[in-house]
Amino acid sequence: MGPLLTLLLLAGAFAGLYFTLLRKPVLSWGATRAECGARLPGDELLEAADGVTTRAITIDASAVHVWPWLAQMGPAPRGGAYTYDWIENLLRLDMHSVDRVLPEFQDPQVGDSFSLGKNQMTLERVEAPRELVWRSGDGNWVWSFVIQELGDKTRLISRNRFHLPTLAGRISMLPMEPASLVMERKMLHGIKERAERLASDHTL
Image 1 (spheres, rainbow, N blue to C red):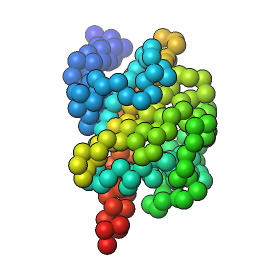
Image 2 (image 1 turned 90 degrees about the horizontal axis):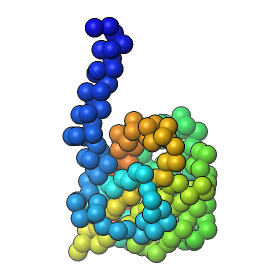
Image 3 (image 1 turned 180 degrees about the horizontal axis):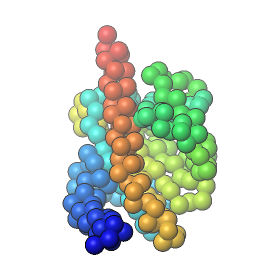
Image 4 (image 1 turned 90 degrees about the vertical axis):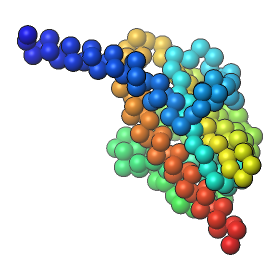
């Protein structure tokens, strides 16, 4: 057996393992089955999605303590993405995650926009402090955040919907799925930590 054939067989085995066992947890980290199956704000902006991720986290704080961190997300001078800035900035996204609330970005409005690499992201839906939905300029990416209150806790749900018009795009997205989990998991934990700290500061 030649090295090329061996490599192809190993790649095929890994792909089979990923699709059968790993892909679903990668796409739905932290989310319940009900959350994954729910229709969320922003879904209507991209009905025919080729890829969907639904990820979530429980936060020991109210919606009003979670909302400020979502409202100000984005590249400088906004608040960053609360993930691995050094990775973001290798892609020249100019992300600098802050640990303070930025008053100048606390009143997001439909039509607000910022550049995220080649994507011009425009705010399509806002309902403070419950939902925030961004859409790329080409309409092929919708990123929704939904905050649901559960007593004195909240669930923060992040959903990405993608339209991938080419076969090459759909294939290239596959290795991006686990990479996006690494970044988004860090982001959700980053928001959780900041929201819980803000809630604690307000009780002092």
